[in-house]
Length: 265
Image 1: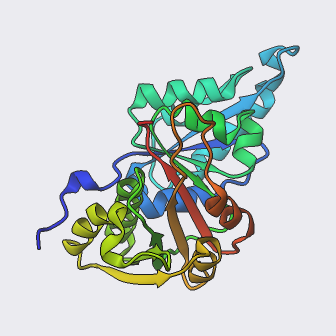
Image 2: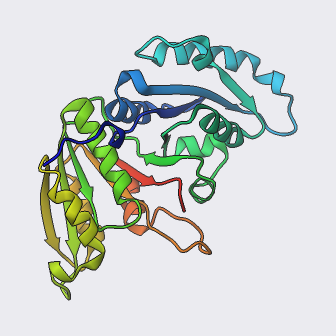
């Protein structure tokens, strides 16, 4: 077995801070993934097209103070800037590209409402790797579950889980689901991930045979502080989506959930 290379870990995480959003869950997730040193916060305020940007001056000053208080590591004034815009999502994309962010964390649903953007639009225009979090991620993540089949976002799910282990010494378990009509060896999609997992003894492995993956994942996730899963992969001509399994768990789980999508389509 070989040590995990440093470039496997998530290097630079950005959480947008928006007026009217709590975003504690996203910030907790960011610190768990990247440690205090590699978390960056940037403020955004939406102003309707028929209003002057100057109407948000007072709110911008308040949000700038909030940013400074949220940082666990002292940053320069550059990282306490607030972007006031008619198009806050467009401004956020510019920040991500300019600062070469590795992972953008968005808390559902408030960030999407405040940025005036849908999950489909975010996935279609992803400026970097994306992680959507629910509102139930705490400050101490001690155990993590990754349901994994071998889709295009499996690697990112693993990178995030290993980063959390590196930062917090959290325990990681992988969950392989396969239906009744095939054997483990016949699950072709999983074989590539299986080879990777064999070289990661720090990840405990679980398997469930089921024809109801939504319920299986939902029940298994109840035992963990955090569930990390990939969004559903879609053909290029289909509307991007987090998928029915992730959608149900994101909406109904009382524990932490992260749904990921890579920058690449």
